[in-house]
Length: 331
Image: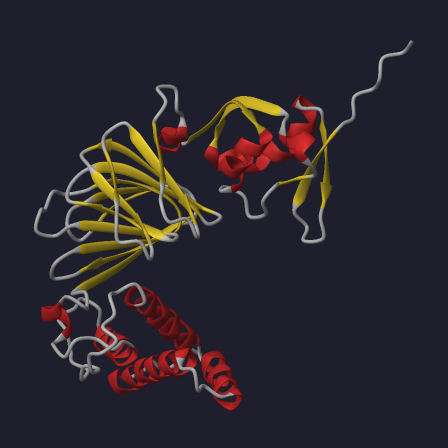
């Protein structure tokens, strides 16, 4: 027997409850009893979990907005939005953040549209609301938000190549890790992996900045920048002519005589459980070859066949590469 569809009022009540729990669980005075009550509500119906997950995404976007600590909170309002539940989500953002006493959209605090994209099983090409084109590598997840005075992408994980529509009045900002990339119209690649971000610029110009630092570092075509969590200034260098980092756009992983230390981050981004190194001597072993990114899972078991290594597992069940000791020559 099929389940009776929810009415509009019942659906709105679930959305209201999801917004309430999103605020309470982020509040410093949230009690253990409230957390237990939330778990009961969350597990009571699949739609509860769905709506709460949507609220968390909106919260994540709001968390990166500028804050005005001295300004009073804004009274919630209903912004223009393509999301039916966005009015409540906007209220979450407005109550949670001490924003200027102006309506959210006109003040530039709240987006007029919000889009979520994920490339789970294959390379994915998407068109954002402003017309910009994005190619997403395997395992990539991002959120796009359109504000009155800017366009904003949050790269939650993975790697993406951007062809940004030119709009000088609405800069295009990509947040990744502990920094951001600011452009008006250009072509560039952003890869986030284990608290490190690498930006490669092919066309146009971008400004790279880290959280907590007002100064930004400019990039010109043919340059790249990388930064880790906690670093104030990105590391800038020229892209080498033989760099194969963008081969993923053709579905390829190219390992050009790399040490395992350098190769494993490129391999692990396609694996559910990362391959680990037993020690530094194992990391110094070199590997080469061209592989299909959809078949990288098959690469790991084959490594002992082509390299002087053997596989074990750690306590987490992740594979560990161990070098095979060389035998001392006789005599």
